[in-house]
Image 1 (cartoon, rainbow, N blue to C red):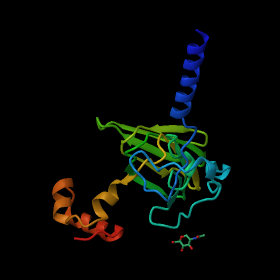
Image 2: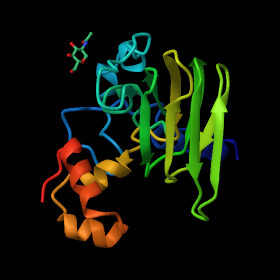
Image 3: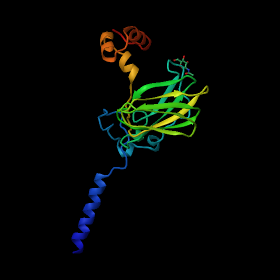
Image 4: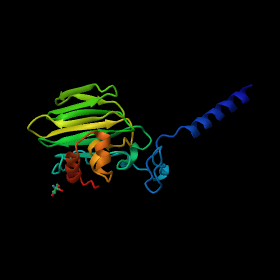
Length: 209
Ligand SMILES: *[C@@H]1O[C@H](CO)[C@@H](O)[C@H](O)[C@H]1NC(C)=O
């Protein structure tokens, strides 16, 4: 009976060996699909695929929102592909704003490492969850819900959002409404906003029609 047991054991080992893969470092030469990038050949993977440098440097906040997000998502950080996680750095100058947005593919946990950030999200029951976060505070933003971050003080703020997906996705509400060619009349009908306000925001954000 020893032989069949041994054979079964070897068979199980080889099955698990085939089924379990340690990692799937992104191969940027192949197209990205819904499950992420294809895997780079293991022989070509190096430690640098698992290391991302650059989040120690402040992003450029000289822009309309006085804010910068430096992503370390699968598109920038090949090692997180397939692992269900990713990270970014958020810089908010005084007066800086990350406008209402959603991540269709991920929940978010944000840690504030410098300054003060007013953050909030709106549930699908339209309840507001709002908090002023100080250095060391964490806040979670459930997947898909509209949320924002605003600098809550007079000094630069830094935070590191991490995500439950290597490609969390991003849709910014004001960009969706005012940064494209959807006719102003339809934006007005579907949002109940005044035409003048819509035209103004289209002008600021680069929308047309
Ligand atoms: C930051 O961005 C602004 C606007 O694009 C640009 O003029 C400026 O040179 C940038 N600063 C740095 C340090 O890259």
